[in-house]
Image (cartoon, rainbow, N blue to C red; front, side, top):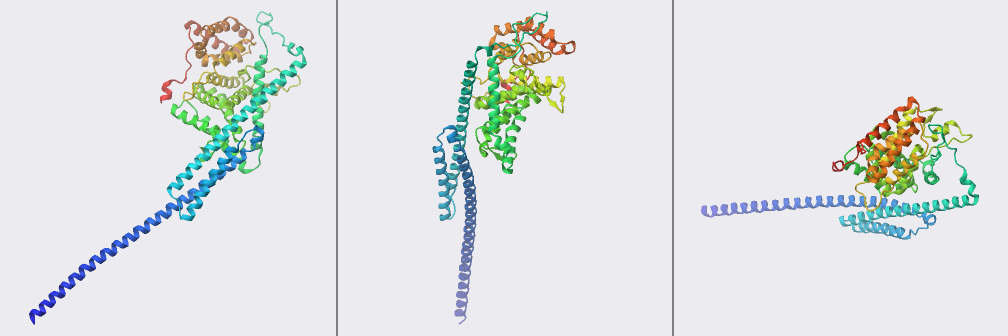
Length: 508
């Protein structure tokens, strides 16, 4: 009985141990199952969050695509005006809108969009942006072509009217002025050549037409239009004001930002995305304000810091090459603020108010008070220095196949024409010095012996004329020019201007 009892107890202990073992295994399996359930729940939550995030992103993409589509529709107004066929752009725009709508609809039916769906939608959005940019460039080219045709027609009409009026129209010429010895200088003119004057007037007319083109944007009372105008103005002017004698890599960033803005691509400005496509008149407005700012930098920044002319000029030259209309507007602004850059000496007309005439000469008149002569000459010098830098510089990352849009030949023309006109006291000597100090070295390399003949002409023939009209109190600018050219003639070399951009600048 004792043995049987012990065997029964042993069996019972064995059963208890087996039960504990099975309970332990069961607990482990239950814990694993719970952990698996929790992992699956977390994965499902993450999947839902990612899916919801993708869905929100798709809705945002769809909204932007629809906005771009509206801008495509707005561009359709150019169809009749410019005789452009925009149907291909509009058709593709509709297809891209349909593609994204289809992705969202399918995703809603299947639960959530996949990463592949989002990638396809992002590619569609980028294609839509590129499509709008291509359309804007196409319209800009068509506008430029139309403007050129209109100018040619207007020029033909003017020439026709001149022919109808007869030859007596061309007979009027100013009376020759008195030279140093009291003799008449019949070989010098008081006014600019007819071809140059015609060019000057065409640029001013083109500038006026540009202002009229964006008048709706500037005169709008709508708060949204005002906000767009302010954003576009900041996006156009702030990068130009940031140009200085900084490293070449930073200058390239500024150039790329301006080029992108003019090409219709969105750029960041003030923490917001800004594009000329926000308004049908956006491109005209940005081109005008950009050109105005370049000239203003010459008037203010270059006037105070002469070395700043070169980085500002190289960006302006590069933009001019890619966007010729901006170059024409730069010239129009420059000629209006500094008529001596044409060169053009405005004549006083009977009945003209004195203040209006002073403004035509380039003086600033505020509250009937004319600015000091020193300040006037400083501003004119800044603008002439910027112009002299532009004509000799090219954007180093651009195409070298095309010629400079406004190269040294224009500098040679300016120099020849200014020497064919009667000098102005203080002004002519100042601007000749500024011009030759900045681009004299480039002209010397380009024209060689011809250039030195021009310098000798200035010394032997033009210096006496300047000296004859210059009072003793205004001799400073004349003496500075005289000493500069005499030193250059002795050394047979015009020095490289201070601040000229070298290859090391672009490597920095």
